[in-house]
Image (spheres, rainbow, N blue to C red):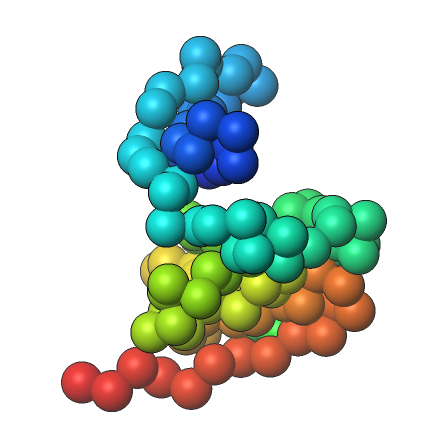
Length: 129
């Protein structure tokens, strides 16, 4: 399942679209985008710098994971923009964040970042406990 979050400067609203089994569900209002003023909307980047799709990001993360066999599950996230109002976020725009549930695969449980503009791949340090 995929979930896509969109914003509209015209309506000042956020919308989410979920896709499951290749079928998109109708957009649902997700919240307000009023905190993103005209100046902030102007800073949202053009998407043509996005070069690495989800399949290639998975392949690169898998190679970097140390897995001997495919992990049983994984989660992926991707942002194109982090607004100034979210400065505490550790997310990096145009970076896929891939995390495997290693099971018996031997994959690292750490998040693996795949830069969507360059393909550079980096295994993050383990989260402090």
